[in-house]
Length: 508
Image 1: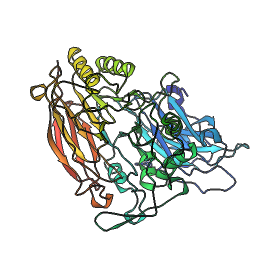
Image 2: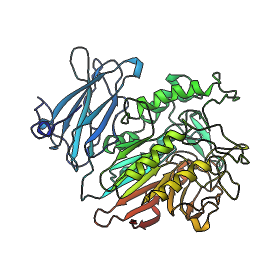
Image 3: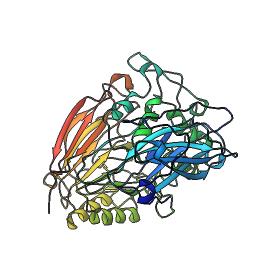
């Protein structure tokens, strides 16, 4: 939907609309009438740029998405936009792209659905701000939600690390993958290794591994039962990636399962269902009509975010001894990444990588991530990353920082060719965060191919420790518009700062 500046400035009045609550526009429900569409999974915005955004919701029956949008802080000065009609084919989810927005502007939105008689049911309110010049940029990042059987624990207050992220009032939230754990059943009770009992809210759809489309959808619906998650999504735009657990553990295209829990053994069939559910429930701007998950999110003059997809195009997981190239990004995505990062005019280029570069992540006797654990020259998936890093150097890319999750602990790594076996690259930082509500692990071994050094690390006290331990981690980043300095910190379940670093931008 294209919104002209005139429309936004001289917005039409919607009869009977209440005033927006000033400040944080958390989701404010209307009285739910059973004969009209409800909003059981909350609302969200996503992929906000200086001039565009996507808003999303889900209803419980067929209905047309209706959005009121205002830049005045008042819904009696809003414009009314009509979106698509939902059906069971999309699990009653709907999104509406917004175009023609003003940079540096806060927008409040109200979402509801019309029934066949034009009657709007339950509505919820949210907000987002478009990036602008001369304004600081802040965001949070993490990954790994509801893993290892740790779901929504009412005794803990739910997924409270989402509240800790929300309390920092970020401009957006980067979820670096494993938004769900489709392969991890969630039971009413889970005995932890320290003898404590973790209690979960449960639904029928999370009782077994996800195989059907309904079961994959049920995982997203489950997470959205948590009020901390819904409150964050209503007030903070989402930038979502996927990794393995949106489908199943350590998957790759063409894989045939031997896991007895699955009746469908073809991973490509499961991945197709998983991707449909992912795109229904995690709103993003589709690129040129394609369901392509890798993309750039333009966040104004200070920041571009390059979201990678390290699942869809990878080759089979190799052995550590595999010397020849093995795809991780695939040729098309790797070329896109180099081309777009080199063309970026933003001060900082965040490479949102759903897997770390220098940490050894095994898959039994195989290699799951990039690092192969073999000293010396690149092998396997390291070839592709070596090419990307060398191209960044060749094209004089400044200020690229890699953000990742996946390994369930927090770390800061500095990569330098002076310590590396492969030396054709410029130094850079990689920041690891997560999990945000899952069992904790680590630390993992480092591979010396690209010369990483551990500057900070905080891991679990024991394997699969519960979130109640406090060892849940997220990153927080702020960019100063005056100096360009990027300040990154790693924080725990309660938002306590564990490590922080000011990084001054370089200039070639």
